Image 1: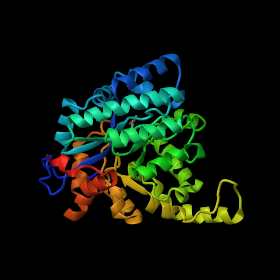
Image 2: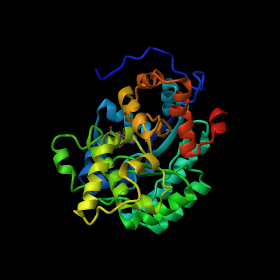
Image 3: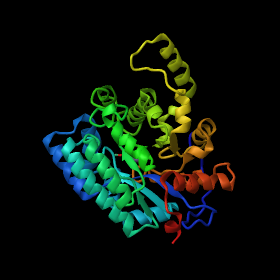
Image 4: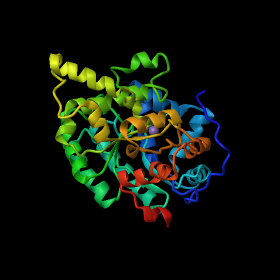
Amino acid sequence: MTQYTPQPTKLETSGGQGYLRVATEEAWWPQEVVAVYRGMLERGEGGPGFHSLIGHYLTSQSDRAKFVVSRLADTGELRLADMDAAGVDHAVLSLTSPGTNSLEPALGTQVATIANDRLAEACAANPARFSGLATLGFEEPDSAVKELDRAINQLGLKGVVCNSHIRGRYLSDTAFWPILEAIEACDVPIYLHPQTPNDSMISTLLESGLDGAIFGFAIETSMHALKIVTSGVLDRFPKLRIVLGHMGEALPFWLYRFDYMHKGQVVSKRYEAIKPLELTPSDYLKRNFWYTSSGMPWGPTIDYVRKVVGADRVMYAMDYPYEYAPDEVRMQDQLDWTLAEKKMFFEDIPVSVFGLDRDAMTS
Ligand code: 1DF
Ligand code: MN
């Protein structure tokens, strides 16, 4: 039995049930990004993961792909009607995967600026319903640090999205540490969002159709988060706040084993890359990470993660438009928690982690 049948309640916005619903991993793209992606597809650029993912959405005539593509670009009628029908008061939007991470460095920097401008415009047009996360051209760290400052302090965006690997490189790489240092100093979170696995990992998954959201995304993104943990970057930047979707991409299931095996590898000096850390791996996953229920609207998983990382680290996300089923909101509304726990999950944790403007949300 993997599905609940929720009570057929009416879903409404405005908090009548005792809390607002804030969805924290909601995908969006501006037409400029679509144009860049179409050019890359035509020229055969971007790698196998890009072609599998973006090639599908931009060419498929399936109802699902058409739904996704029509909604991604919309921050008006279509999206608002869907949010209303699902009882979602406020969406934290971010540039859909792979964002700028598959672009050549100079283009990534240029596209990040455009995307941040467009997203800030969409949020300013409807601050009650939308907030946004900035994207960065990670491969040009000096520009990225400047764009971060502009995006947060001038445009009013609420954090950063990183769509996992950056043309095969990871935020654990010291080249990116100046960006992490700036994000920590800005006191905003970074949402480590999935994309297809990097070119050296993807082929075995691709041949089985498992490279995307069904599983490959989680392999890629959990590995990225674990590389951040084991690299020691969180000893250097201990206040960094990282958000993981999909209930932590399965990492919370592994806490005991990470600690046991990491300790064994440190003691045996098996790898140059596995160094002593100030804390155990599970400590970082309970200190620096927050977790959202995007695509994982299932009580047993949510309750397990709350139990092992702490209920104050677990919040709601939908993953619209890739995931859109109002019944999933009902399932989470009807979890066996107190009203205060539901308010924490749907409203209070998103507001505090992303620094959202609660007054704007209710005006
Ligand atoms: C899909 C899923 C695509 C997620 C996404 O971005 C995405 C999908 C391109 O179903 O193809 O963000 N997701 O987070 O699960
Ligand atoms: Mn997503």
